[in-house]
Length: 454
Image (cartoon, rainbow, N blue to C red; front, side, top):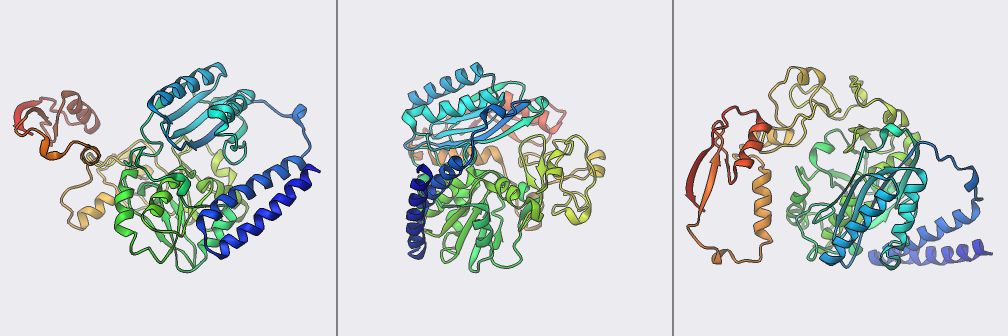
């Protein structure tokens, strides 16, 4: 009887969804898709017999999840949530990294089977059931029976301003509830083949260098060529007009970066915005038996795998063994010699002030060649005088959000400046200079201190 009840609800929601799609009503489509997914999960749960007594709880479990909160928590509530999460996770024997912002959570956690599920159960009860809709398949992505050696050694719960640092702040950022329509991998796959469509890679450019969507017909691929996510808002504002008549698809590794990015696009006046639910990981899982579908190359990851392909064999390879892949599998190339390559190793980075990871083959890495990333090479080829400067970029971002008018800042204030004796780059603190020296290997640590006008 219960299954029939949800089947009727599902049928009604599907009819409403088809009407909304015919009317191109993005907001109704989003809310109705959520209902459809909810009813489908419930029907599946009712149809699956309980086997709780036979569950294999060996090894450790991995939990990947993110959750936005709107309206944002107050600073007091944010602090309380930090302490609550840290205390609960420690009591359950869970380790890993959990970022907590006033706008929600973003976590990668490892722990015992029961401990992980006890945390997700507690999350559903938090904030008067705000997270009650989250399930252990789509929202809390749990992988069980992994080797104990893959567990994080300790727990780190820390506060951040934004879950994804777009430089938009929390209180003035566009609502994720008004973001793009979430599409399942099969729906996204079909959209990629439609005409008058663009697919925007919301990841950093060095991630896209080793893998991306490449449909043979249909959607046009766009790489915004970002070094950091804070560059995306400016790119969106510069390109919104030329894309206004296009159907816009977005994707990232796990989905979290698209939440705010799609909301920003819609806030700028674009209505036809869609995003890949669960990100590249979900898509490659769905199309693993079909060689990755419309995906080519590898998916860059921020863990010891570094990258993975569509097949399980790619995920199970030892990350410490760097084999030369065959050329027909490779999308990327070495930044130094242009040899086909798709493995980031050795923690080599583009020289300061850029600092992004460098894609170097085994030979160039072993010979310690001087190299720059593809974006810096492109800047040099185009005659761009100043390369990307992360510190200057963030300083300008801070000034942009400063509420104090620039005209009210006192003129002629004296500040101490420390200059590198090799490249002459300046710093406002001695500690900043020493960090620069350690990062670059510049031997001359003598700081030239002087007084200059701000």
